[in-house]
Image: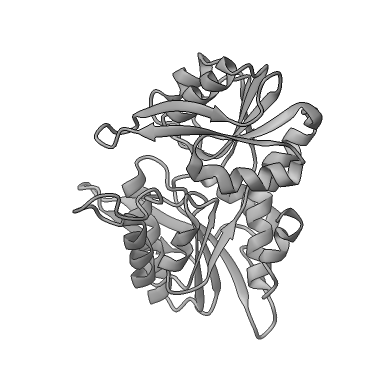
Length: 325
């Protein structure tokens, strides 16, 4: 079946864009419905066409799309899908974007810069979205950009469960790769019961993806260090952070991050680094050429499915994380 119905009340329907169909299928399986048949094609000039092949009138719609490369195409496709649902009289539309595109542009660092994260929320609101769902936003303030509910999910329980079975926590230190991720790393350290360290760095604002690592602050000598981040893009930050930890006497460095953006040359950097394991989730698709021996990919689908079910049944999404805060 393609939907869950409460007689005389609500009808849950799931929709998937073309960016990451495998994740959408897995989410649908956990929810217990089928993805609604949808026609998505490109015109010769690159414009996108969308049409739903079943009635969506009065449904509680969840539109799943990964903001992966080519990111602008997939964001536009999701906007068009939302617009089609709105015009077809869907009752409520929730945009599910496991990775929030443009999240790093959440404030003006210098004059004459955009705040593109705010523009993103405005676009989805204008298209007809009633609610947004995302995982590990780059900054929590993005929740305030959207005029409506924002479900900010956390991948930490998924990643931690994997790590707890592999680590001697008595000799482990959680490390933030920069001061911006300290709050996230504090949550990890509190949950795991480990010391916390961080790396002080400075970024060259005139050179994209350029990072200068300075000093390690915290207890890392003779310990296994778990570097925590929300995303790995070109892997420059994380690899330099790992080098700094080894220079300060760390015996092992593991990386745990939610979003595997893996822009070039990330894969080569990670493969050739001294990092022993890179743990990520499948919020973004990873083609075969971006997989490597020390990469572990964990599924985020069960978490998203549970959140969708809570929203549909008017339950509590916060309850999914109350034991992890």
